[in-house]
Image (spheres, rainbow, N blue to C red):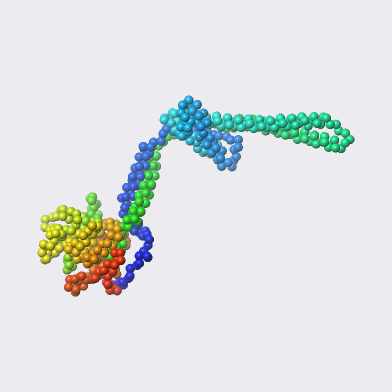
Length: 519
């Protein structure tokens, strides 16, 4: 025995059910797997279609006068930017004797600073030989420009130092002349002036020597910088591995496609709001899940899976046949998103009941799934809804209909006053499930339970409602129906947005009605 509990308010419901979201995304694995596979194929195709042009590379050792051990790469970055100037490009084109414009040539090469003094140059061309020639010319042009700049800088520095030295020499000559014009006497002031001139002469001699040495060092340092700037790695073609590029691009495309597919599946699941869990479907329909069945496969299955599917179908047929047999009112099967599976289930139940007496299947489906089904000799007759009135009262009727959008709700009661909903998981939205429950309640059609088609195999939620009309219908509604003379056992009232309210006892006893529940 279980106690009756009040349903939780909608405000207490979580904003996002992660378990339902994960299940919904997993059920859409065909979508994100297809997008991932498409990304893989597109990535591999791009590696084949977008082949890189022939490329050659060379490395240049660049010596700088301002080299410091703690340099952060500023000098080599400056060299990279200088490489991308029209002056270097024009010099290289002159070496190649090419009429190409420097602006166009600059788009076909790039420089990369590998270390503080090592520059790598990559050039593309129409062929490997042309790329190698371009790389060599560009490296030579850069080295020549760098050497020219170093020499000009050294000459400018030496000239400035020598000019300063010459000015000091002129000043020294004036000091020497002043010393020669003055003779030491007994005047203390004259003696002090001569001493200051001698001190100034000594200072000028020292500075002249220093400037001369610095000018000489500037001249001597330039050959070292010139010799240090050279091509250390001759131009050579860059080999591209097509299999490696294809595998790399395919892997990137696979990851991007998988991420995009998962994102689309997740967003679609949240926006569509299609319940897939047992508890969600049961709560939205207001009826418990009494049985489950895998969707009919469209391709051959493995033998062990086929045996399990047949066993599950036989248990479902036994359960529904017992339900129909024990009911004093006509029972119908109403499908939502699984007309083909419902047709097969209805024929199997009708065959099971045919051993006890005549049975007629009333076809209320909008499509030809049941009317054009392959029937075996001796199978129960299938009649349309228009001919159902001509069926004798002593013949048991099993109605088959649909609760999909566009259903004529007033015709459903003619199929049966009690019904079993056959619902495919993830097909109907939560709003439509509420609509189905409300419409069936308005038509006073009691829902015996829900048969879930194509459930998620990892769903561990409970699809049983313990505290409402559902248990009464599944358990002891037949007993109450007999007591009430075959009338409706409960007054069902639709309130709010598809929520069902029933007058029910505080204590409810759940009686297993199927073999699966008994186990």
